Length: 400
Ligand SMILES: Nc1nc2c(c(=O)[nH]1)N[C@H]1C(S)=C(S)[C@@H](COP(=O)(O)O)O[C@H]1N2
Ligand SMILES: [Mo]
Image (cartoon, rainbow, N blue to C red; front, side):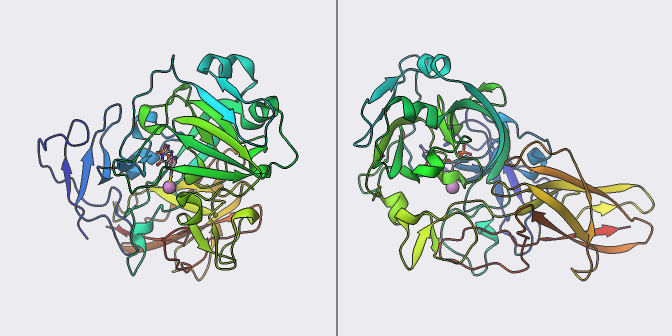
């Protein structure tokens, strides 16, 4: 399949300035292939990213920008459900923390947050639940993401639990609800609000972050502050945070009750008991997964010239124990070298030298196993919203 791309510049909605197909494969997806006719567009503050939709803005990171250990701020993917995204003035921004299950509601400025609490730096993968949805066959509705609805960054902020405890938590606290400053363009679209169960909200790794890779958060990644829920899918990582509410009953907003749900019991991962029904339950943890960043799909390797396979593996927070490669369609596997372990929520690099001594097609497959004992499956568990695609992917190369 040939991937056609047109380059555009300017912000979303800008005029198309030029057309330039660039060779195939930079982020062609396999198997299936959702990458036809991709368009690269630069939102303000971002380099050109793969446009999936304009309103709301949904832009994914090209494979070439996922090669670095930390995904650059200007290349980090952008995911929104609502089209009204205000520019927030950091000096006048306030975070309200309250709800029926706290005794002392607070209002915090960015300075209060930075000066009043211990600062934490944490490397973690942010991955949309629907990453790779475009690879589903048959197609499922939703943003047709390829591999790039994810990224890895160093997040800096303060622990949510330190802020909540300062408000005086009641023992009846059941869920914490988060709201951001973005608003719907149409009155029928429900506001984007998410909730977490108490244990996850009070986890030492759940942060209110104001920096990403040692810089203030980019506008489109949630400035001036967002939630970081390491190990859980991006949907909980609420951007442009304005309100945090602790409550004694399950939150019944649309984005908890109707969206981001999976069939109960179909996948491993933490339970979210207060939101569970016999049929469905909220998606929670990221499943073990991997991405080959080098070589790109369909690369032709030069015979006898050294070549290397490399990429990233990650999971929902146990860490990666091994990443293996197969050159015989999954009949046999051998372990690859793992790079330094940056932490259990970080992605882990892997690499292996490729045999380029014989000409012909080279069909590679990669699978990761987590320290928790989960391993990437051969088959997709089909689910209506197209979440959790962590299948083993094959990579077709050629030696010539
Ligand atoms: N305010 C707000 N926060 C949000 C969303 C949103 O629509 N509005 N989308 C969520 C989803 S589904 C994902 S996958 C992540 C994506 O984070 P990013 O846009 O910084 O890459 O943001 C989350 N936080
Ligand atoms: Mo998402």
